[in-house]
Length: 239
Ligand code: NAP
Image (cartoon, rainbow, N blue to C red; front, side):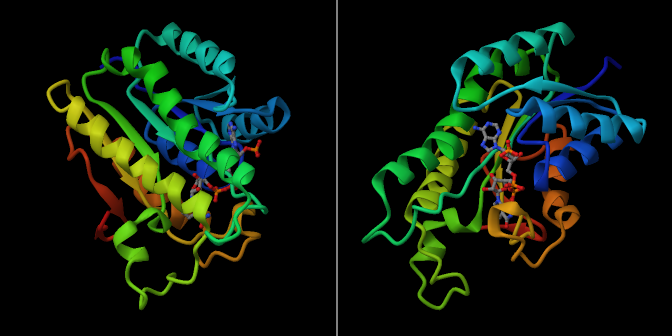
């Protein structure tokens, strides 16, 4: 069997780091697409020290020139089996719909939505060369419009417009791309990691990063699995 290759964006810390580790532990070469060379190389060194096959690739999902460069590096392997669109931000100026700063909303959409779209489009030619290409979009239950419409939902009060809208838009990308690729053997799914203690939420999350990464890794490693789904540990979510 040829060497299997995955690319994870935002892998230098948090959930992305654990996802990279989990995929690499299954024998994949994992490309660590980090925007900061220092923290990207540091993460690569830690995982290499664990005898995992990883390589740092400079990648800022808001900068097309780095996306194109990363797509070329993957061409060294002749194909890509898995893309995990994990890079994401929260912005302190984002917030309730009545007062969220419009520039902050734009920044969040640029990274969390447009960054994932640009990344997937750039590597699609390489995913098509895999026997079982997969795209995992790291979404959030905060992107579920159905959940937001339920005032009794436990996170109903978390109305952070830019972040939630970016994840809802990412989910739309998942559904539409899954439909478009349904006859091409490429699965596209959204995964909600759950509320996980990371820098993104000042470590208020209740799960460990290993718990947050688990479903993402499972879906990333699943060949010929379902497509166009919104998944979390234990099952499917409403859009
Ligand atoms: P985190 O620890 O803050 O990690 C975010 C990662 O994204 C970092 O590696 C960061 O790199 C990277 N990143 C941000 N902007 C980037 C860009 N323009 N280009 C490349 N990389 C970029 O947060 P996390 O909680 O692990 O978040 C990972 C994903 O899970 C995000 O998509 C987030 O929305 C999602 N999520 C998290 C939770 C949660 O409770 N934590 C819940 C649901 C969904 P730098 O180190 O350079 O900033």
